[in-house]
Image (tube, rainbow, N blue to C red; front, side, top):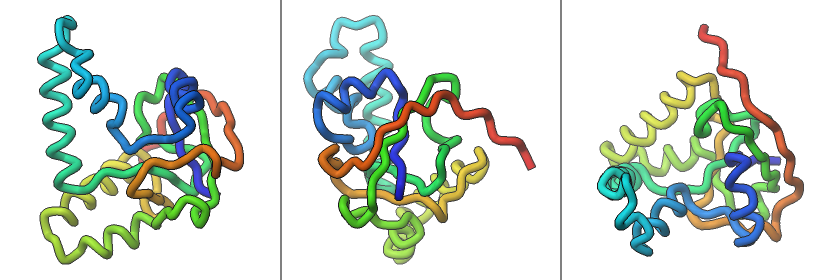
Length: 157
């Protein structure tokens, strides 16, 4: 079983849409629909989306999963989390190490992917237990949904 974690306030949106979107999909929709215009932080949100797209172009854009029952590198540690459980074969998920291996011939992409792995390790996660999909994931394949609360900050080594 592999798990996708999200912030508890996002659960209603995921459940009503019936799928887990690629990372950044909510910000993308917000910007592309023009919902950020005339908002106090509109230029900040536009800049954030441009920078995020640049990162995705360098390393790829995914729906993230882990084999671990927690995920320290997932969003704000102070916000309660929800865990969606899937069988990797049902959703065409690929292990993160295998995706990195496929990208090893592209030095720029591999370096960006390695930076994500190192960031996760620095927070206490194990990238060797990460999985990704290259497209949104239907909740039709979800085996279980659990409210898991907050994750404690990982102890430094």
